[in-house]
Image (cartoon, rainbow, N blue to C red):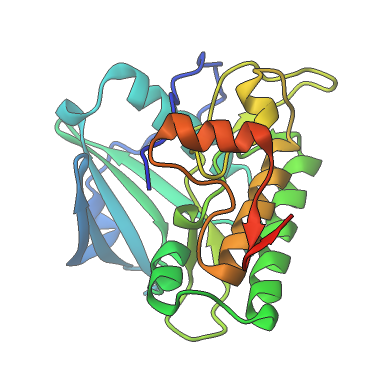
Length: 250
């Protein structure tokens, strides 16, 4: 899938919680590496007091520009204020001279996107279960005037590897709180999932509902409703709003 669109909208100040300056090794036992990205590594850690398994994202300070740092702190601030069974939990953020250490809930089941790729599509029963959880999380956010703005299969994680594993919504880097009656102007999101009103740069939290519909479509048939050979072609398809489902024009 193509990369995200421009995610660098204006940064609004958040009330950040305190970043811990103490040695992370005092609180956590560091385990195996779970993955690696341009920012650094993700490792499995165990909280020493509770013995709970958690994920630790190591973010190299010299690998992220100032805007990326603000986006990360904004994401952490929003997530720390949330408590929902289908939204990833953030426990702590540590800092030393070289890195940030972000401690989150550990989801061993991988991304929904990867499971779609493996299984091709889901049964209606399984799709309904996943969507019920996703819509519950989205409703919870919207009741708190928060729009996620980048809902997609890559941003849903399975808690474990079981077939009926709960799902967790992740990646709140471009989420935002919305003043009542106000409209967002920034173009945020990922081409396959983006709502047409976002492209018109006048939208509200309902852009998330469109993205939920796209996710449901992909769950049932294994491919996105709006397609193209490039980002521009995909966005033109989104604007037209016509699609086919198993060969039938909708």
